[in-house]
Each structure stands twice: as structure tokens, then as C-alpha cells.
View 1 (cartoon, rainbow, N blue to C red):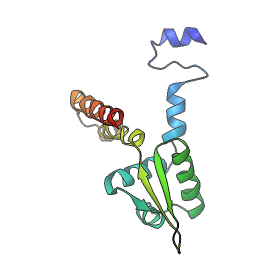
View 2: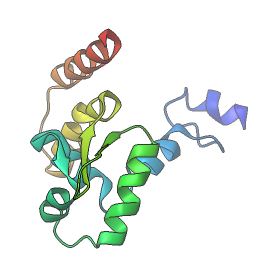
View 3: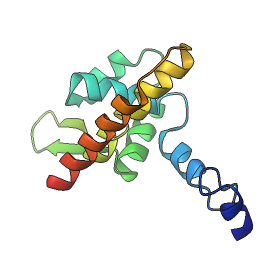
Length: 133
């Protein structure tokens, strides 16, 4: 297994503990990126607001997806002791660090040119801000 990691210079290790596979567990699937983008653009949202902005998702799938995103450290869930109960979700710094990667994916899907230096500068800014907090 270690040979594969060295063979691909860490870009695509193709090993049991593949970092790409781990990333896809965190952001893969039909809804996770849509939810992350919605929260990134709109900021803190309540469960029903996320449901409205993610047309077609069922309540059960939304609930399990939000739990997974929270467990992976990509969103923060804040529950308020109110009647009726109020729960809000916010993208974490770790989730915000995906923004340049999402932008790159958008360019890739649209077959558009992109400024890789600009995208990496964005990533550096997010990393610096996350480290400063």
C-alpha cells in the first residue's frame, strides 16, 4: 500500500486510507455540497429555511445529512432553549475552507478558464482566518 502513495506522490494515493475517499465521505452525495453552498451564501439558517432552499430533499434525508455535516465539523448546530424549539446551522471555518475548491469545481463543470493563483490565494486567506481564531 505504501508503494502506491509514493508512486503517485501523494496526489492520488489509491490506498486504503485515500484522502480523496475521506473527502468524498465528508462532501459527497446529492445534498451536502448544495447545503454547504446555501449556508455559505445565506449565512446562518434554520432547518426549515435550509429545507426550502434545497428543493426535493426529504425531511429524513435533510436531518441525517445535517448530522453528518456536523459530525464532520463542516457545520455548527446551535439549539436554543425556546418554545417552540429553534435550531440554527452555520458553516464552520473548516466548511468555509471548501469555498475555493467549490469555485474550482464550478469552473471545471462549466469548462471555464480559472485563475489558479486567485483560487489558491482565497484558500490561503481562509486558512489564515481559521488559524487566527
